[in-house]
Length: 593
Image 1 (cartoon, helix red, strand yellow):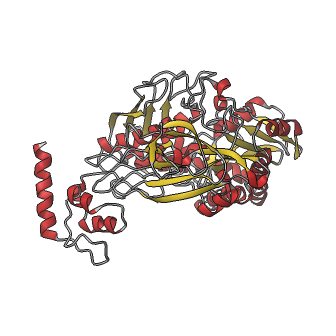
Image 2: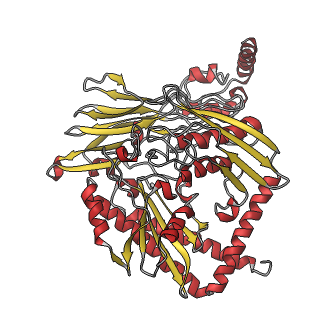
Image 3: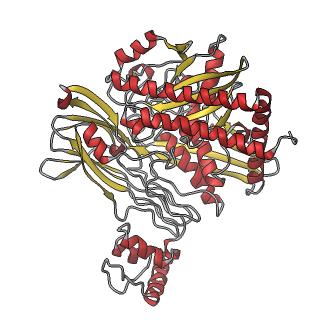
């Protein structure tokens, strides 16, 4: 539509993003659980009435890429959509990510036509699983997983709650008032989206908005075409591996086949050469398999491309039924679909780009929902022994290095790309009967490189008075985050417990454990490097030493940087001649190996 005013195109596109941000702000400020009001484990999006993703602002990649499949389930299952409707959807076999991500969908009508769907997706503190956790790695099927499943079920009719559905949730979820508060926050966010989209459409008219939609998708596609046309041509294959556990004593192999065709401006991401679904909760849902490999692609080529249906026209994702990273065959469980194997898809894809083509891709970032991100539960004596359950986001996994940048210290995890928040220590300790003992940088855990991976953290926390149960799913213990193009691997992720006497004992990487008063749950985390560490600017190594990211010993033996005196002061000085000699010595040593 060459006659569409480009200024108006930009104005409306930015207005849609601002609507999404207002929805997000509603969720952040009104959500009841710490998962929402501290960690920001939620996303909002706008989808067209014919089920194409158009706007998601700062939505988490794992939540928003594929959000259109949720709206598609709503329109397929209900031929009587009407103003005032709202639907609850969390079915991983009908386009959702995993059962713990509840999504509220509100169809938006303009001049009697279903023009948009406003969506608010939020990870729940509790989703009714058989155990008090939203991650069930050992669940052999969806029945053993135990979560309540809502396949786009109507929860509002004519703006009034369908109370039967609310009662079902409140009966099965361990802290019903907390869930209901989060439910209302999600509904409020989606209704804000409905109101603002209606105002926007009334201002410009439905015809103009419909013309905008098509031009915005075409513009986004042109942006993607431009990027792909400048990529190297070829087919590359990357391999990764999730840590061993239970049914997979050798781990879960991951294969990603990437074909870039600049002439046709298409990228194909082929995941068909992977093992079958497992009798475990780590299988990827269709949406997670698709969005995680696409996140790795966008990280590798241009993260600023609009993420919408126009862009997606230029990416073909090949999946196969009954694959651990494909289309799960019911009743295989997808309880852990948003993390772990999904994060391996992200990091394997971006590292494969980096390994093959200089200047593209990233090293691997840390993966998994280890103890620093555990779901904790117990009873709170301050509230007459009432139960509590919530996921903690206290760890800081090391971000991956890229061609031009060091890893991001507060990266979070691969599927969210640093868009989530860490918990507030003070609010956590006020809201729940837990104490956070320690949260600090883990020195020398970074993947060394010309651009280094971010160091991880050391985090420990535990119950104040009564036994606390913690469920977690660590990855990167056996197979740490890999570096690329000569960069070093990050340090292994380690789960441990601190006993009352201060001694530390190792824990299984994937487990549900009870902690007695005085005991602490702990985790050590990390991230991979990019390029030869001997080429890193000595002054940047100096900065890392002063920040206590890197020790003097590691600076000398890995980066080849020598200081006048190994004392942590602002006058720390690099000795250029000794540094050059040390680097020559290390290069000779590497050559001899």
